[in-house]
Length: 410
Image 1 (cartoon, rainbow, N blue to C red):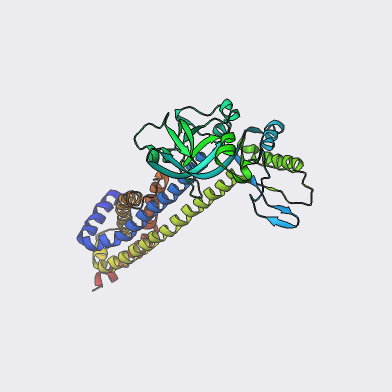
Image 2: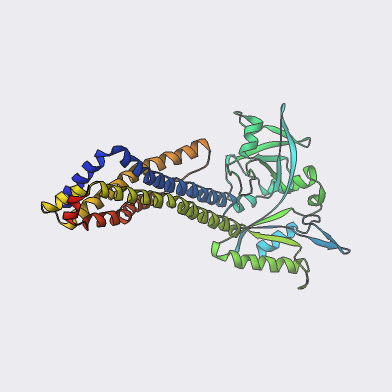
């Protein structure tokens, strides 16, 4: 008997007990659907982290003021201005691995336009900030060095600020007030989205660093050439660690820090931080897939149980077939095909359930999901493997029956 004939017999046998066949397939349906959905959720998390890495800019190192000791008192990070514009330009000048350096100051303020107002972040920057962060202007233009040198009252707004202050109105050329100081909007920034720590990068207004220091922001950042932080873009990703070490050594020399003393600045390689989060997302994806795969094993055990029941119920039928010339391998093939058919049909329905589940999570939970074709194929192939693995024992048992004992079975 060939496989095609065995398949026809197997399908007829499954149609006799439709409800039992459907319940048997349910475990495979749930297992395949769960694997596809969970992998899509994990892949969505990875894609989100990758987007955040891209939004922060490629090959970025950020330096913040660190802790300092004053007369034996240890002050917290940022309590004193330990970084300056001169530090930034020294890094740009003395370290060939660095592509661009951008010092900046940061604060918050209430911004007023007409009868609307919005509390947002104020970023005092230089023209180097835009290429350092890979941040494009979609309307208008960027800052110029002349505007920085002259402490001009011009500003660029992020998408969130533009939406809340202007709605559908064109922001270009409009005048806003930041701490009662009028600024003319010269540009609208491209969308950046949120960082991994939840900060909305589009909820910011960018103004010249000199203007921010003298007219908007106070505190340590307003002192002379002090800056709140320095963003460094390294030429290539492979040079990040070397550049980090060179920047640290240069700043220690400039700040006259002794070998036994701690840095008075904090240096963070954002690529390493975000890559570790991406690695954690990959582990999450594998974990979710592994947990979901348990459902497939449970479904396989259900197939084995039902097939054993089927062998018992059809013992006389098996005896009759053997009596008229069917060989053991024919019986083995028939029952194995039944088990695999159950698995494949369940797997096909499970793919539909997985696609529907992924869409439902993305729509209702607003969680990004990314369908993985590999996961779909692997889940479907695994369902067939489950049918073969768990269907083999019942099929082997049926093929091993003695024809005479089978005919006598009541």
